[in-house]
Image (tube, rainbow, N blue to C red; front, side, top):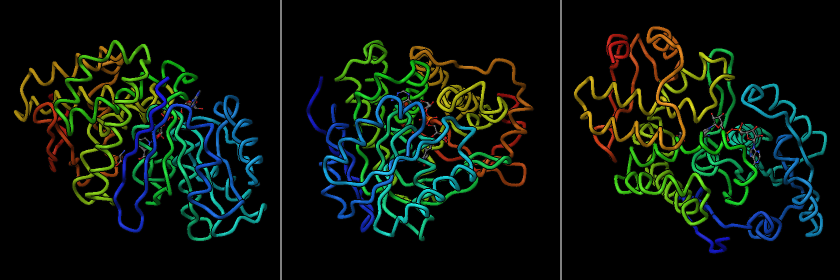
Length: 359
Ligand code: NAD
Ligand code: GLY
């Protein structure tokens, strides 16, 4: 086990915080809480799957350290990322008399993190929360940057708020209990960082994918750290996504459409993003923004990770129609982030149906 601790700063003025990555960190949560809060009133929000592996140990640890942890166990899965589930969290907080200084811990994947962060953003107009992400998607992406929220039946992540956590504490050991399908899905977000921001990280992933698939601890630590560094830098430059932060959406415009077309059941988030990375690169090549070699490197890396590079049976027209529900769609055109080479992307404002359907 790699016991060294890595730290990444997220620099946002008064809302700055640190990401700490350390194997075994899960056993130190209570000790770390002391440094960031004076309250003893802690809500631990998690889902049933994560609770089975980790909740009891976290509760015991917090109780021993003098905290009064209140567990809030949610049903797992994207279908529960709804306002109704946030309502359930808020019911517990009100019933247990949580106050402005009380603190929530989001112990779980991106679904738990987005729900907990949103509940923390709106309860008593905002209370502090800490992210303890337990999936690869959450460790490299969703726990960092303060986007919180829920889905609406007319669109994913339509309701939400920016609310930064007080800290992000990552224990890569959590990934050992993660189902393999979820682990592979997370690799799509990691590959995304190589394409959007770091050519040499992309090449590192090409070399290291076989070790990563065996959960090699050094390689896992390296990809979490580098992904968090890239995300932290982008968020620090553009916290509320008025410009630069949009690059993080590469692969997601088509990815979200595919997720929605599958009713959020056939493809999980990272799997849809993996296909989106390849299809959006192909679109870029059709438009002359990048060369065929770049697309083939992206496709090969996606396939090497065990992800798919194409949807099973979706027509381009259906994908286009689903893309119209995207928050980034306007007047029959979609704003898309497209690669111009490994490590570089650009934002294109006016991608229309013809471009998508021909690619
Ligand atoms: P998830 O939270 O649904 O977790 C996936 C599954 O793994 C769930 O069944 C969960 O119970 C289980 N699980 C979690 N940790 C585990 C562990 N250590 N051991 C065993 N099982 C475990 O999915 P996800 O992929 O983590 O997150 C996807 C969500 O994140 C989507 O809703 C997406 O929109 C959101 N997201 C948000 C942001 C953001 O910036 N806020 C960024 C990316 C993704
Ligand atoms: N995952 C996209 C973002 O955080 O902006």
